[in-house]
Image 1: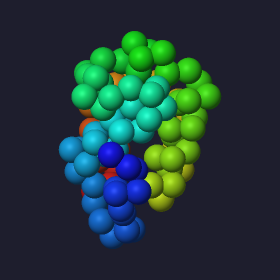
Image 2 (image 1 turned 90 degrees about the vertical axis):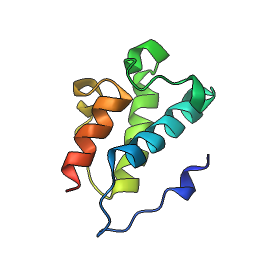
Image 3 (image 1 turned 30 degrees about the vertical axis):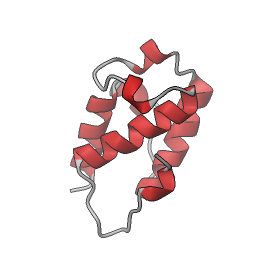
Image 4 (image 1 turned 60 degrees about the vertical axis):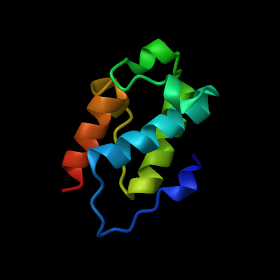
Length: 92
């Protein structure tokens, strides 16, 4: 899925499912794997997501959600499920 299909305006609140789908697609794109191969409960480390790719994904996430994040966010919430839950809480 193309990330441009995930649109957002500043008044729209993102659900956990929407954020998870976005993260899955970004991770799959970064790692050149199929989205279906990503387990949302597996740590990002299990996918060999290096710091450069993590920062790239975080930059895209900031642009998509229109917010700035501390780079340690991905390390504090080390799975797609945990990160999506945290981000969904922040949008409400």
